[in-house]
Image 1 (spheres, rainbow, N blue to C red):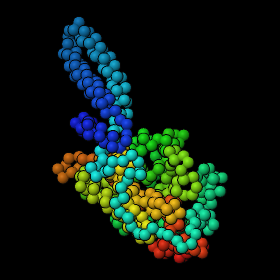
Image 2 (image 1 turned 180 degrees about the vertical axis):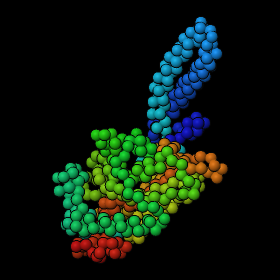
Image 3 (image 1 turned 90 degrees about the horizontal axis):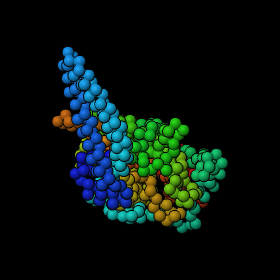
Image 4 (image 1 turned 30 degrees about the vertical axis):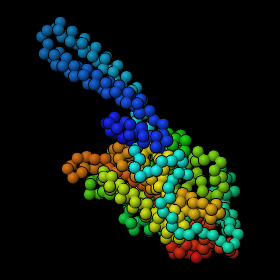
Amino acid sequence: MLDIKFIRDNAELIKLAAQKKKMLVDIDQLLITDDERRARLTAIETKKAEQNRVSGEIVAASQDAVRRESLIAQMQLLKTEIQAEETALHAVMEKWQALMLQVPNIPDMSVPDGNSDADNVEIKNWGEQTHFAFPAKDHTELMVKLKLVDFERGVKVHGFRGYYLRGDGARLAWAIWNYANQFFLAKGFEPLLVPSIVRKSNLYGTGHLPNDADDVYRTQDDDYLIGTSEVSTMGMYSDEVIERSELPLKLLAFSPCYRREAGSHGKDTKGLIRVHEFFKLEQVLLCEASHEESVRWHEWINRNTEEFIESLGIPYRTVLNCGADIGQGQVKKYDIELWVPAEKKYREISSASYFHDFQTRRFNIRYRDEAGKLRYAHSLNCTAIPTPRILVSLIENFQQADGTVLVPEALRSFFGKERIG
């Protein structure tokens, strides 16, 4: 969420930001509503000041019964008027807050224009695209044949997009989690196991609501299942003042994640690319309120995941997301995409974003700067690694002519053997 004073002072810039992000938001209506909000607040403050003045006069007129009765009547009238103003303010505030929640953050100048993820710009390419001298199989065929996954029973139990990882498929997921923990904790992160069920306010805090409402699971108690542990991790520090000496806070959060994939009807209906339930390690970072600091840590967390992928030996590319492919709160975003041989294309495995104080304003996460002034911290996040999606590229890139799959060397001590099958 942006500061309303900043929005008022930079209305045209906010309109350009919305245009670049391909978001519909009525800034003019927000400013009109804010004028009404401020007018209502001023009217209430004026009447309350008058109420205090009359209250003092009532005390002073204790010996004048006629004047006292007149002042009491005036007090009752003011009370009624204040109640009416507060009722009107409540309606205005609801409209104002709904409009404020739609205002996008301003993208960095380096973010390219574009209408979809097809307009993202490749900025790095690592490793040679894997090609085979034999008829290669996709991950679904390989994993079913090697009994690493059971889609049929997964659908029976869960429904569409259901799956079981079993045998060496389950062991491979555990190996990836354990290796990723070792790899990222060596970077100075604190490990977290976070709640998967959260209050609605936490999704508003991260900016996933109201925009992603169709893609989140909701309980009968009006709580929500998280689609990323970023939500729980940011909520952890809501309404707190963090010691400046603790910044930057580097947190590595692990959780199951849930997404309805409501906007993906007909896409990736087979395999493990797009499932409703998965697991993810997420890098979450809070730093001082400095653009330069945000940029520096953004590059760092994205590079962490690049290094992790390189250690596995999977070809990838990194893209700079265009305006239409970054979220409402994001200032800038990178995606890392892994090579999928069967599709002969790259597939997203990680996103790295920074938000300035967009999220921390909503969560009220602050720290005291060198002068002792309270400032909103800056927030960043980046996928460390998701499972089972990474298995798609890993299984396909490391398949052998005899139908077996080599285990990347970095995982062997965690997996216990060099080959599957």
